[in-house]
Image 1 (tube, rainbow, N blue to C red):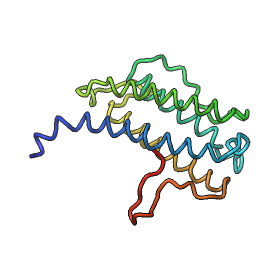
Image 2 (image 1 turned 120 degrees about the vertical axis):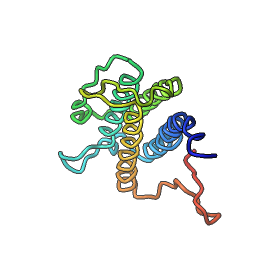
Image 3 (image 1 turned 30 degrees about the horizontal axis):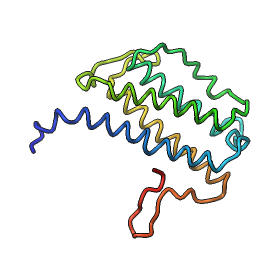
Image 4 (image 1 turned 180 degrees about the vertical axis):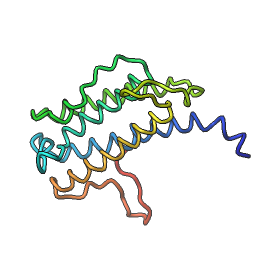
Length: 177
């Protein structure tokens, strides 16, 4: 296959991979992290300049909704970004998970229906414009970064390995699915 014949397949492959990262890698890891923690631990913060896991989950939901559901999907954008970081109530784990799962279902629906031919079209998002490709890449990368922070905080608070991989065969096998 030459480069030109592969080009039409890049857009759907990119979108499919983003959907897999969000729904099949990051979400299950977040769920496993939250299973290890109490509601109080989820809202623990090292200091006032740091975010709790709860704040990060609210932030991930707000960001993904704003960039994909609203930005690409056309839903009304009513995000109050600073409130994601200012929240200090101990919102129960079940409620946080419900919010993240619902947001990712909506993100997945928008991406599943997205017209691949519009990947380079520009959309108004967060006071600027971005291509659909930039928006999808941004949300995927953003989810990855904060998932890593949540994993680190969980390991610190739970004081145990989260068992995301099984090395019994010598090669890492995913265990979060």
